[in-house]
Length: 298
Image 1 (cartoon, rainbow, N blue to C red):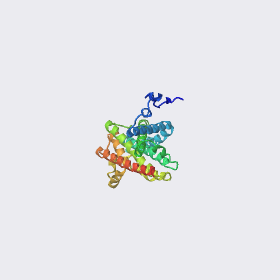
Image 2 (cartoon, one colour; image 1 turned 120 degrees about the horizontal axis):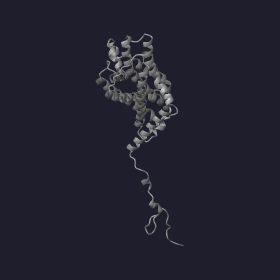
Image 3 (spheres, one colour; image 1 turned 135 degrees about the vertical axis):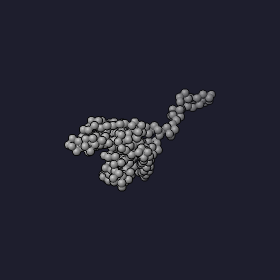
Image 4 (tube, rainbow, N blue to C red; image 1 turned 60 degrees about the vertical axis):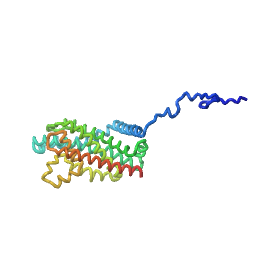
């Protein structure tokens, strides 16, 4: 019987030779090293890509819910009213009103889409099915999972804002005179979209499915009616108490900012608009992240 040790893969022979598998890469060499930051970045991008793919696949549902409200507002106030002789401020005033209304409708579209694309799905995901657990299993911090929802909602809001401009170009019976201030528009739009995505996050983590009607009934509708969509904030000067009260409404700053970006009419100072919107963004993100952590880790 031979006393020599048989040469097997991966086993050293008595003469110091190494088996066949020494020619292959080890497991550590096959698996690339990835830092936690890199893994989080990849997972964040994958979650965002997933939401964008879902948006594209569900475009038949996305377009009606995005277009209907802006279309009806512009159709009634900028087409029907002038046609039946009820244009606000006569013929010249109707043109000014239609122009000011477009800026307000852009702000309204962004806010509604931010709430609908973030808050409502999140309420369902936190329901009894606990679908949110699929997301938090991704290799990234819980706060980044919530932040991805905000970014996805901001993209939805930006698309809805773009869809307002074809409506404004086609529907009104009176001319709409837009004068675009590109630096303001290109900086205000991302800020507004992120703020409304964060608003949707804060709503989505604090409302149960059974309380969603209350969300729209006692919060969203007052925000829209007192959000300076149909009139500039300065026009509330005859009602000083209301002019001060509506400053608590983030939609006011959005609409006033878009009036500065899209029209030459009266609007709130941008020195007030930008800090207020950034402050609301920080507030809503803090409220949304704290609520998200509480719901997920409970």
